Length: 293
Image (cartoon, rainbow, N blue to C red; front, side, top):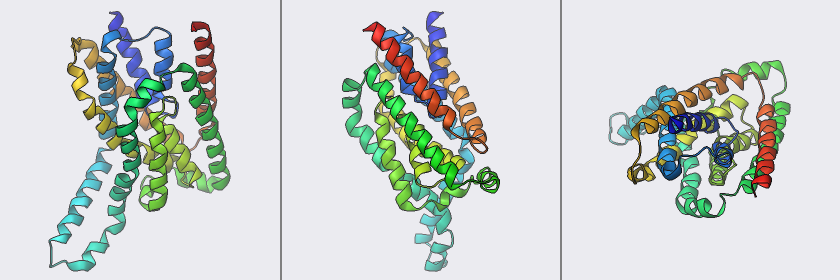
């Protein structure tokens, strides 16, 4: 029963922390400090939680993913279609660009995860380091949000922001790449993948909802790759299947709602509250870590 409750708590933490810019790793560190863990099954549940949030991403963004894939295959087919000719290749170039942006922006984060993840897990699992990154990137998010507020000041801009879900196709290639580079920093616990990519996107001139949407879509290849690499860990030792499945269901459900309502929220609100929350969480981690040590 205790393990079931722990699975639910960790599923909620993962579902919220993966998509809200508040760092799932920071909350998991706090949970472990408070004694909420799953012992020898930690690695297995870590994989399960990520599969839950991956499923939430795929389900929510399925229409977009289907559209991008269809357009990609269409472009490839033109290479072998002499009748349509070279002119047809450029007809849908702008639509195809979204697929290219995602692939390009994924490369830095994928390389960081591949070559640095083991080192990070060994040397950076420290509550004070996590608290420091939570606070630093929380302040940075607030600064980026204030910059965006100033750049897009006015009711007209805020209204337009709520209907820009197709705007990521207009992101310049160099901006997408820089957002991808910032995503590589997410290997450091406490940074937050969504937080750092949203922050960099705001600094680069994207609107709030546009930044959040691109951040979520950009996380799909990274989360999928990390989940598949760690998949064998699900079968290491004895794992109780019931709490494992429960953690997947909870992280999926909470993650799906987090995506849906964050996109709705930032269409008319700012990220300042998330920055203040990160600072509060960092101070709490510092306090607990001080007394534990």
